[in-house]
Image (cartoon, rainbow, N blue to C red; front, side):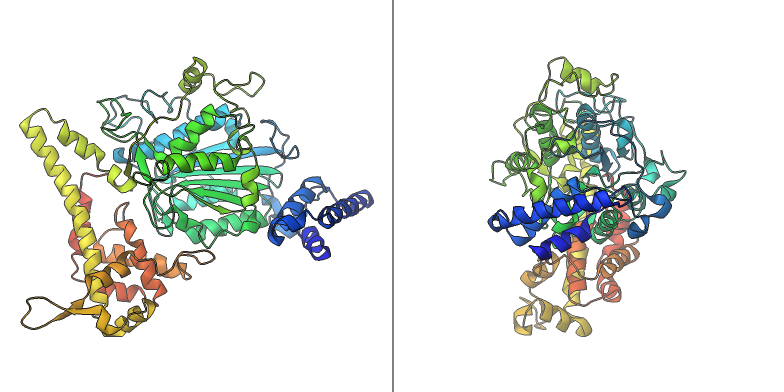
Length: 586
């Protein structure tokens, strides 16, 4: 117990200079905590869990002081302003609630990502979030897109409200990129001076922070509409910096993306006071929903998916449930059930949890707004924007309810506009043109996959790297090579199953306590080499082959090995075709 208390006192921070009174108060709090441990409550849980719980209790009761030198913040310390939003459901010392919402894609085929984020904005505003505490990053090319059958409007579900109405966008177009996202999240005002609204998460040690991301993902990275991908180690570095700088009391992250579990698996330390859930584990696709032809379906005039399954699951729950009582754990279970298609996973994914599991016992309203107490909004709660069609829709007795769903894998959802055009073409000429566009998009994808397979196969034939691969995969030469059937030369080629293992196998990573890669700079260099060899950067489809690149890094290979393997693989032709493909890319 004494060791725990010493660890706790080292981790406690505050905002008023220490005094005799505060030290007496600190001593009293420590005695209470010691009694708490001696009474056996700590024995009911793991050592780390009891430490976390007591530390949080002391942190909320102990007078605190602002030691700028201990944070390294100096003049960039978080701003202190009086609480003006809703009262927290678990901790009355919480000062304010902040949120950062980002859609990491662009293009009509990715309608659903900006729709998710627009919807999330209104859920939080209805819940009592102040407008100035919700920061939105979207490319903003959907509402007024020439493909939009409802100009100026965006819908996240069939028959739902216009979620674009009343949306306040802080960063759009080229300003939506990984660098700016990390700067905004980390509260770095100087980095975004003169960019967009210039607003950042200016939270402090007594604030809660909620982050929601929706877009494409791949092992170890998340997509962005412009610039480089967002890598897991970069996100973790910013979160750790925020923790060290005391820019939040607790934070919650919801991530909608394929292989999104790889962003936290083996990386998110439970001691950072962060709880994260992801739409998928580290190896699978997440799913789009409310697509053409589904039940329920968008109107016939829509040729694209309106939402993503995990995203609409948590938001539609937030609109009908009482978040002043529902915990994050209960919401997680409800979202997991819906996203997994009642645990069949026939049209769904494994929703995952990471980080500090103590946080899941807190009220969901602490992060989505305590005014989200059911279909009826408490009149005493802060009112959302009166101009919002969203608010009018709910106030007129049209609350959303969780609807039956069908779903489609994220990467296939991008093709829905092309499939819809082909299926609904009214003239032979239009049908032929639609088929040509769809065939071109499918062909471009096939050639990307063929190039990746050819490169993986060729690596086993390069003497200076093959032994590294066989060692990493625990294979013997006789199991790697098989005689080519029908070949007079009896030429040896890598067994297709072995090539598949390199392309799609996990090599045991990520797993509990083990991240996707140890050398993230290697993964970045591999992604850059792919772009250099193929004539264009990885896009929202080819990024799935980051699994291959991660495996190469873990086997001790480098960018020059990938360059040699990609040469003559058809990669350049695939890259050139992708430029002219009809499917929007991020």
